[in-house]
Amino acid sequence: MGVRSEQVSRSIATMAHTAPLQSPRRRLMVGCGVAAAWGASAGAWAGEALTIRFSHVVAPDTPKGLAVERFRQLVQQRTGGRIQVAVYPDGQLYGDHDEMQALQLGAVEMLAPSLSKFGRIGFPEFELFDLPYFFPDMASVQQVTQGPLGQRMLDRLARQRLVGLGFMDNGFKHMSANRPLLEPAHFAGLRMRVQASRVIASHMRALGARPVTLSFSETKRALSTGVVDGTENPISNFWTQGMHQVQTDLSLTHHGYLGYAVVANQRFWSGMGAADRALVGQALREALAHGNQIAQLENDKALAELRSAGQTRIHGPSTRQAEQMRLAAEPVHAELAKRIGAHWLVDVRDAFTSA
Ligand code: LMR
Image 1 (cartoon, rainbow, N blue to C red):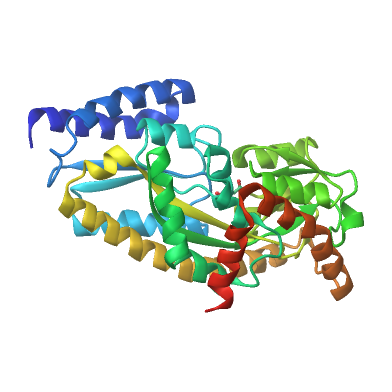
Image 2 (cartoon, rainbow, N blue to C red; image 1 turned 180 degrees about the horizontal axis):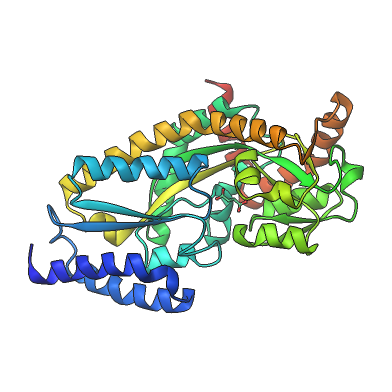
């Protein structure tokens, strides 16, 4: 290993272990310096030591946390530790507000933001995945994400200097508050925390609630202090964040999908050297397949744990209530079709109905 790349590699590794102590702004500045340094030596990395910083915002024992951990292990095993994946869960390095910028600047190498978070960086078609009652089940989602249309969406990310490496499932979302949320009338006047997705905000408005965009890491506190009254998430996130400690009721509305795209900094990815890129890419594909296999189980496990903790009233809508919820969401589909072009909705629906 050349002295220069050894220093760069070391400085990345050192930063990876000290970064959580720095302010986000400082971290971004330091990250840019490091990015500029390794950018200059990109291509000289093949076969050399490397630390890939992978930041995400959820707990380690979630579908995403477990898939990323599997990726870390596979890379570690197959390179004998020459390539390390330093995983930063729980938003400890970067949160929703700054992780995308950190990636683009090279302050981290990989992320797995929810698909809902790509709209605001110029990819509103990713908000298709947020449409309420659009996908009937996980198999339909996978027909899209694991097929040519999903690949086309990932390829478009290059416009923002991102390499889209694959999709990862969490599951279907449910509503929580300190009351049941089973029909539109139950949402009247509630402030509901949402991710930064216009589709999700519009859905809350269609239900009569007021959407409040907050980062994931702020959500539990905002619920506990009454800044917001409720939220939506798959149960694995609800449980591992301890949201049941601050919300009395969970309504199993199954109203929309939550999943992720794994993205890498383009300069890092193309500078890695063909053999390492193939190895890391293969490890990621296997980790994603594993994550997608266990996602439903993890959500089922979280529901079982929630039930046995006994702190939460768990409700299911009646057929009439489910129909009311579905009808209330219809304008949200028309609104997105107008914004991104109806062909997107047609293509996605075709991808899962023609399967
Ligand atoms: C949220 O912000 O609610 C989720 O996107 C968090 C996550 O990454 O699962």
